[in-house]
Image (cartoon, rainbow, N blue to C red; front, side, top):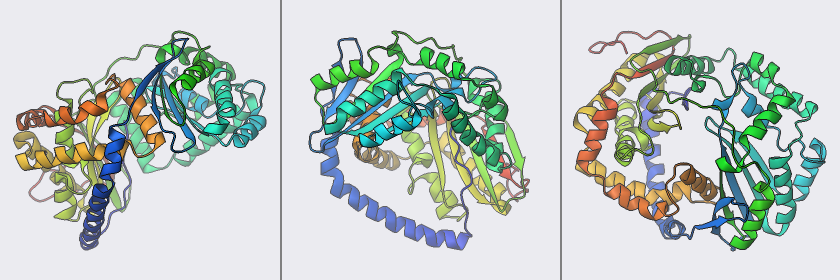
Length: 464
């Protein structure tokens, strides 16, 4: 579950002045949005092709020959939730090693070849997936795809790079050992997820990292990197026939099926308050309510409700009540967090410590009002218009972002024509639908985390 902690908080008067600046910036952003709208609308109408290779590897392709660049993004099902007990951090460590030597090239030689090809390669570990990406010049795609093939199929996992990357990760872990927000996050995950893999830190800890061997890395790579759990998107200066052969070059020799450990679904444990007490000038607040699965029929109603509640940067109810009217925080937001095995609606903010209890009361009041009364027709209409228009800006503004979006659409099983259908799905949501979603998600007693000094009682409101 993502954490948004440690925001800097200003005095109320400074926050109000800051609000004037934010509104001016927002006005400029909206003006730029309408100037860019015709270009981005064309992006929304882009042609997405499904390319299937001879060996059965499937990718979504958007051809764009205007710039000699190619971006590829892919993910294998199974991420840090697959870390074996006692070896937490394994997947994260593995993703730091794919460009540290592969095939017949050691770390230094591989890096030189990558630089010579003018390509950028990266891998990342997430809860439910192991991601990879590459950006390359189209006239050097032979060299770039060749290196990507080596990284995907034949990572070396030499001991020297393992020790060096492990030391880098360990350095970060040790640096955060006394950080209140890191400690709070770890306690929060344990409190709401219990013994589930989602409760464990993605990077592991100093004890678990020490147990991970090269054989462990090779075993997980063999289990995880298989065509059966692969999703690929490619954007740029390449045609379908060429991509088909490249897919087999890079992924065609992988095993057919993954061998992953089962991961159970889990509901966050709500109705609890966790206080992580530190003598800090500001207090971080996080609250969790039930979320919604991406496949649920009321997903779009929940998304629209969340946008009105706290998803919109400058116009949400939480922003208006917490920042604009009271100057309690620089920012406050709500987010729908959707993982494969759990989901939640999170509200996060940070405020001056002597006003933390007051801020918490206001947040809960805003959420309660949304649960009981829902949004207005005017709020819903404006939010629909924004969400339809802003999709291209947020998701289709570069070749890399398009590739990322297409991979996520595949993971969510939304279909290759989703972008064309999306506006109709949003516009079909009624006010009654959104009110029902608000009542369903926001009527529960939330989980609350407070990082800072002990809360003080607020006149006219209960503690927390």
